[in-house]
Length: 149
Image (cartoon, rainbow, N blue to C red; front, side, top):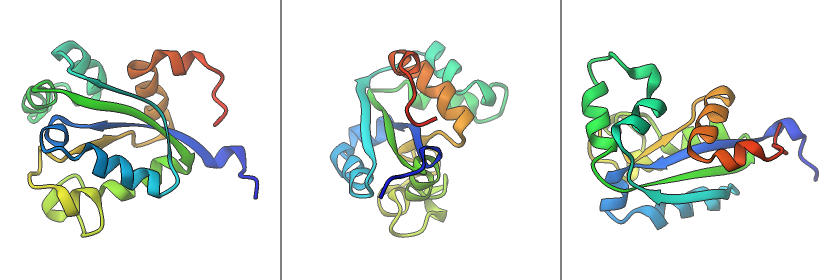
């Protein structure tokens, strides 16, 4: 079966410092791959406040912004681009609700999460945010022809 090109998407996923510290990288990536998603790019890195501000630009000025930046810059994270059929809604459903206490069992946050702010993962929430985030974290992919568009 050939997929319609419009069904194929890229999504930026961050395995946040709590996921790295708790040694959940393989567990989480395995879940994504088991759903048929492909890792297109991946990097372990520690970011500074400037990169955090570029990534979370829409949250600047909100009450939770400073604690969010403090957390996301507190240690190494895994940034990756996943690709697959309807990757954005699939990954967001797999991740579960932002607040781990509200995330249902079977989701990453529902099974593995322990704190509303330290919630293991981030994923782009729309094709527009995915394009912006992929270009920010993996500029080399933004320069490639996007076969998913």
